[in-house]
Length: 135
Image (cartoon, rainbow, N blue to C red; front, side, top):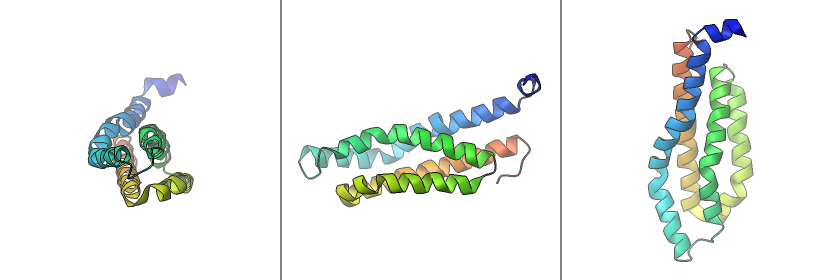
């Protein structure tokens, strides 16, 4: 444990994870903001059910967990495990997405793709900083 803390490797890995989760979370929020605004307008006018706002409000927290898991699996060289995270998320959110229609499906798709892409990019950069191949 002392040997691990003396090296910069642990700090590089933790920094990469924080960038993937928090830093990229802010960027993703800006990317999906127009869709969130449109969903909120549709809920306010009654076009979409009010339950859809629960999906949108929980998305940021789910995104954090998603990026932690994705970053961990990708940075450790286990991309197949990362694929399981995406599959599990898709399976659990499918009912809510089908209730919300195309707008909610677009929001989910854009958010998920941005989340996966950011975790992938940051994990590759972290692996390179650690002297490992990108994937």
